[in-house]
Image (cartoon, rainbow, N blue to C red; front, side):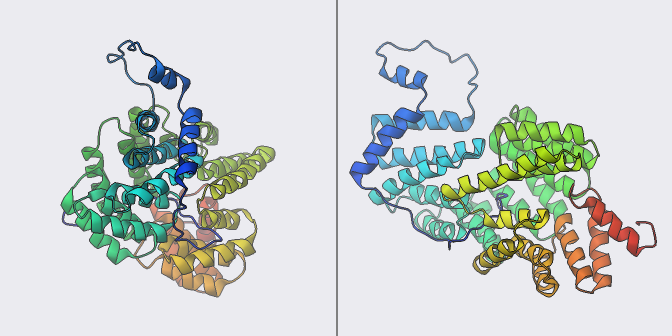
Length: 461
């Protein structure tokens, strides 16, 4: 791969406290108590029974394993740690499995479990590259990108031939807005191993720089390199669908989302992608069913909020309010388990008329730490909604500095330019967003069409 250009599509997040905190270390006695208690509580009874039985279990090799990959990984790692409860590499294996399970379920309590395990492992073998990679992955999952940068830098230094170490580093660099460094790191990663992990990062970097066609090309390579039924490949299908959706190609987006559902039955990200497509087509009933299906398996705030927007659009005020209230409950749950989410909620508040003063405060604090294009966009939008158009205009320009072709960023920038008294710039940006995908957002597509209609004498080009 000769082009350096993506990082895994991490959620944008933030928080009131500064990032970069170290892992908390437990005493050996406290940790052993934690391990035994967590294993007894977490290992399914069938697994515990099989470990304690003296007679061999009947062979099921010919039967398909219905468990998700993360659940299998957790149960295998738990069994290993039961046999060797003080072995640091077994701790690291279980911590990594917990991160995979958190990805499957959206349950942030797995991060707390992983934290205790990787902290104890790091105390025993602080130079071990697997421990450093796992610690970095945990920091990325918690959106603590300053800490992830530190872990990734040390992992690359200790394991310069390990592509996964470069993956932690490039993800952190992207989220911190260090795009030139990220391009170089992604190239190093691809040179070591051109596979699904490196191609997805190349794809994202290309997308951020406005090369959507190149991003699709790299994502296609990632899918081709992945296992047919793997969760990572299904995730890539969804990212491909998102790229097509941004370009307004709803048919291609739908095909990509459906491919993910063929790889993993009931894949929540695929269901949510199809919901976006149906909403863009005006079929709000089907969209609501699909979002409900996604939320039932993976209640991420992004999907719960989208379901609330659908309820609101359909006039179901009570259902919308319950969904929005659940977003706040989830915010508290994520924070309680060490996840920085306030920047995400700043955008939610700005979109839904929430606490705008808080939205601006947390977005500015996050922007000071990681001036990425997405945080710049969130800050600009919150500033506009709070009445500060000049500041919003400045940060909106920063959000577009890489040449993004994201319709939402372009729409935000156009509305901000209009409010700041720059009609020519506003018209250009709004028209570009419309040309890409006139139904880019359930919340804002109608407003985009209205603004263009008003400025063109009753019609949209």
